[in-house]
Image 1 (tube, each protein chain N blue to C red):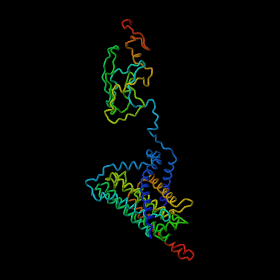
Image 2: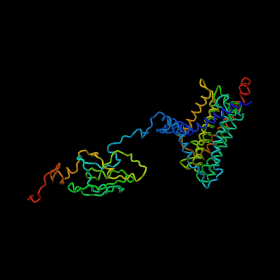
Image 3: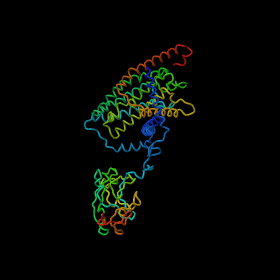
Image 4: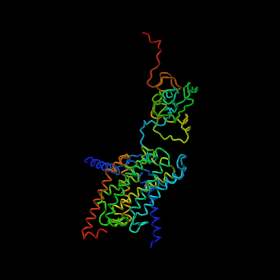
Length: 180
Length: 327
């Protein structure tokens, strides 16, 4: 008999607990008008960045393509005869209908060229429009790393410096002079 | 002499407001469920989203009017109309304000009970005609539910009828001028409200639909406007349940200061909100639990309530000074 009263009380208490929610504010973010805050490291749309000199950072090493768990990155390396045979991607294609935004490509990239940015609004009416070519991916800025310039620290000869003249670099040593 | 123009206006007003309110109720329910789940409901179309039902209606009208090839076509098509027609017919006897009722029948309570029982047929034959196992299970549950609530629904009303001494709903409201029947008839009210929830297929007695278990129960196979009719019928029966509760136990149009129709609408709104709150809170019964509960708990409770009420009415009638109070 007591249990009936406990059940009845619990039913009414349940009603009251739900009714109290009338006076709380909804947690919904009303998306098109209100935008959620996306942290700078949020993994969204993938871009290809440029170094501070305005040159492409990508050296077409294929590491992003190899690291990609869903194989959505395709590129073709080529040498640029006008810039000391510098490697660059002839085409660079990301299929965003496959991409899982895991950020493995960004981790693999030795030159900080490929970066994920806080943008998720990539809806398209046709699936083929989700295949981004190099001109869609390449941005004019440096992305998250403003001062990083791969060729300044890479220790290779470029158009305006020789080996050993880069940042944090010593002049090359003639190994034959290192006698005991 | 019946004033035909008055009757025509009453019919137009009640029919129009019932159908509009049933549409608005869909929006209200979604909004309130949203509020109680800490989100917004539909809030885009119109002020506060109140035109959502209109958009839903336009969408549902443009849908293909499809009858499954394995269904019993004639019955399948007729069924959604039955639930709406019977629910609307019940509103004929609902007195909204003094002298504002379509048919002031002297057996209004019985008419209401008959119509609500007929509405149950739409659920049963709708599920049967669909020829689908989920719809069939929904129908089976509806029958089990019907067997449990129909008996004590009638009995729970009889206390109010005894106190008022009339089957006429206007007389019952008039008898509550000084005291609402919910006070002497509290258990009658509880039993009736429970039966009404079962009759309207609302949580916690929504086993015939049971979205979580039976797809959509008896209307699994229905789509387009035929589904819309079932939906409107369900909300009409919510309106009817709250209207009847107000009339039988909460003094109908009686209340200070405000006009009678406003009091009626306010009380009805309170019950509609309560019904939605119950949906937002309580889980669903099993149908064997409802059967057990209906026959072993509520039925004896309604009988004892009826017995005591009858005894008290007779006892009061026995004393000459109270004889005038009981017709």
